[in-house]
Length: 179
Image (cartoon, rainbow, N blue to C red; front, top):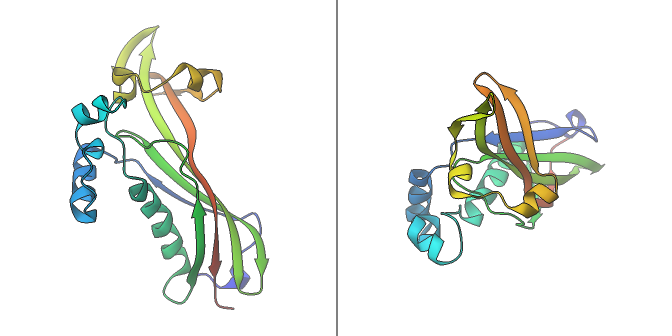
């Protein structure tokens, strides 16, 4: 656990999770008691207007609290967390949670939080798709995503990866650390 003297304004705490899949969502549904089938059954999710299952909001929120809990340790405290869920988290997404220290007052540390998803769409080589991910197969990317500049590319070993990067949950937190 860091001491308050170890923390600086501008410091970023980060946690990344890239193993979101249907089995994990089924296990979460069972453990949480939230068995709404839009989180576990594609056919039901599609009938409600979704293009496939989506992760539970509290599933994503759990990664934020895990990151902060591990950071403060046994002697620190999480005082407040506030987030607004603005985008769905789906199977195949890489969920990145970052908290930037914006202010320190006494033993309290104020953080701006951003939880975002990296959604792989496909990999192309020579203009041909060599690998397509669930987002490409199910049409998760919308014209609005394209218009908002959320679609990006980068070179990977197999070719050019096309992916969507978007903020899924912005927010804030206050933690307390010992001196």
